[in-house]
Length: 423
Image (cartoon, rainbow, N blue to C red; front, top):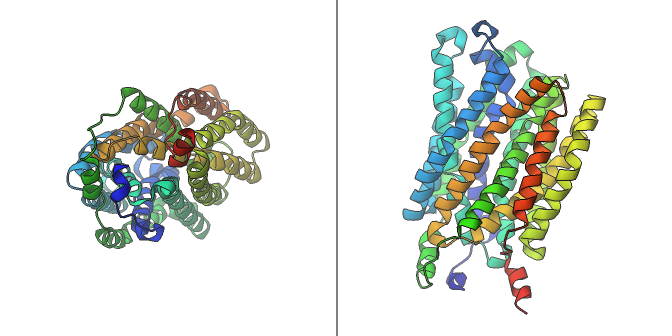
């Protein structure tokens, strides 16, 4: 293979990518975990309407600019290198989270408050849209071929570590502060904590080696290739399912408070369970995909999730307890993370080095924007419209069924399986 002349990096050397990725997603996802409190600060009932729906809609605006960020920063990563693109996306994310934390509430500056909130949220989306492509391309290029699944699993494991940290922060704040204090200023502490560690992330990323020029040089000796449209379509469909799955899990803390009527502290603990289990399962599925292949791990995880999502929501709706919320979240978390790594590494492996950053960024950003970004709003809207606590389960199951059909047409890209199939 053309890439065999590359010098690969040991796993601990790429930790800066994972840490930076975790910080970026912590900053982006914290908004969702504090959606109720943000709604009270920026969309009080005096403005009319449902403050939570307005806050979730604002959360969704961050997805509108993700495709633009994927195109601009992702393509920049294919021209200037993975490292400059990762530094740019991370710096923009730090600026946006600081702006959101410091924007006064509606009671102080009126309509300017939600306007500024939306602007900073859209800047967050622009930054995150350009984060995944360059960082995933870097991990693929830094990894020995037989361990690509594990290396790319860091992309998801660190995202889920961000979920875990955000859940811990939310749990601590919810238990330490009164509801009024959490609404007024407590949620801002979570945002400021994310902003405080941005300089560390920038410092660590600046110390990374560049992998793009070496990979592109090796690929230049091979015949130029363009990815088949069918690969892009299947990749988009599978990533869209993963987007819905991840944001269903992110919604669990809101579902626990808003639909099941649980206290904020109890609901935030579901986020901790989700993040902790997914961190471990992401790495396990990455290792399994290196050994058994990307496609088998993806299909088994997606199929089981399609069968078990409705029973999980039935249990939560029936018992309306913290225990049922935690159990259902645990089951879905393990299976969602089983899909993530194999899908992303499969798509990235199939792309030429000179196009990886841009194509992965754009496909990922559009899939997350169209499907992930609308998930929480739709789950709340469908629950209110139907009065049925199982509405989220029916929506998620339908999406999974379509994704399972698409995943069946994926080509196996794991080097171990490819070698086995040639003998």
